[in-house]
Amino acid sequence: MARPKKSSVKLHEPTDRGGVRLYTLEVFLLSGPIPKKFAKEKPKISRTIQIRGDQTLEDLHHVVFDAFDRWDEHMYEFQFGEGPMDPKGSRYVLPSAYEMDMGEANPPAGRVDQASVESLGLEAGRSFGYWFDFGDDWWHQINVEAIEEEVPSGTFPRVTKRVGKSPPQYPEEDE
Image 1: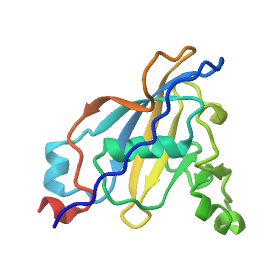
Image 2 (image 1 turned 90 degrees about the vertical axis):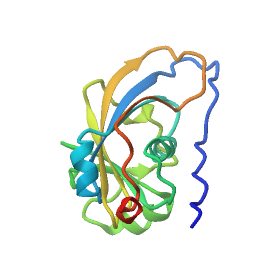
Image 3 (image 1 turned 180 degrees about the vertical axis):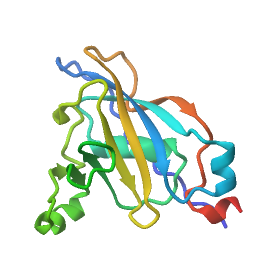
Image 4 (image 1 turned 60 degrees about the vertical axis):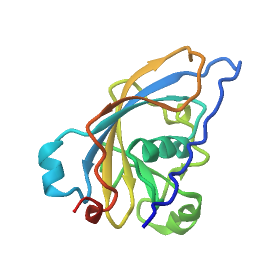
């Protein structure tokens, strides 16, 4: 069966606006439906990503999605709490989930398509969570490695380093 075409990351060209910073993030795969044999052979899987502060969490999702060689879109959210999987932390969700989740004990702090990376108040050394596919539960920890005051020329977001092979999105793909 042919695999659907991977999503294309929405790329943004730099602008002349002042005050935009460059964020270097290391994204670690914490857990998910990883086949045991795969996990044993590749215990550490991460991607280093650079993203402009004026880009959104939706842009970050797209680059992470592609960096881990995924092809089937699912719901996702970003979590900013005491750790990457803190259920009491601030949550940024898809527009379709925003209104629906407003009655929950921990309503969303915002929408991924409206929250810029810069608006999150991130600092180097901070980590936050990214939860992809609420059925298979792919959990990621995102560490803020560096924040630079100037953005070099080029297209962002972009992957600058890959550690480990991506696990198959669905376990049966590797069996």
